[in-house]
Length: 179
Image (cartoon, rainbow, N blue to C red):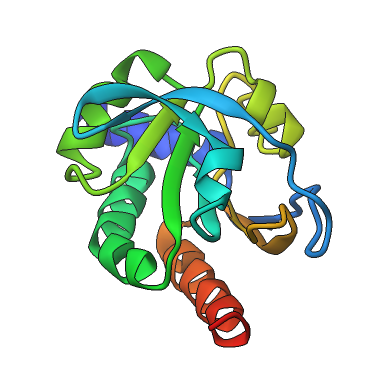
């Protein structure tokens, strides 16, 4: 019962609905380097290095092991092979409970894509992905970034349902014009 009440209170605090991400389509995405984990193994992730291979799907999520973030991680895990076939790299970033990123990368991301901790919020602030209602956490905001650092897609909504589909459409559109 405590979990249900906690979930209801969290939903009330966080609210729902789309928000506006600061980085508009066509703007230049800030470069960053973060400590990340893939399949529970730590490594250094560089946006610049990843963009040399193709577009990057960068998604911010509030906190590991919360309901919406787990749903979103599962959806990105299921789509990771399709993104990879289009030449895209997926990475999730959070400021919330950054100490659980390694575990989250293997359990909920199913060893399919990297997730990174941003405890000092440098990346989250650069991408205007701070959750207004709970500033120590990240907002649920997704970006698709082209190899030239151009933002191809941006979407903010605490509901995880459309993030993967919108990112996939943006990557497919980019790939069609960059065979």
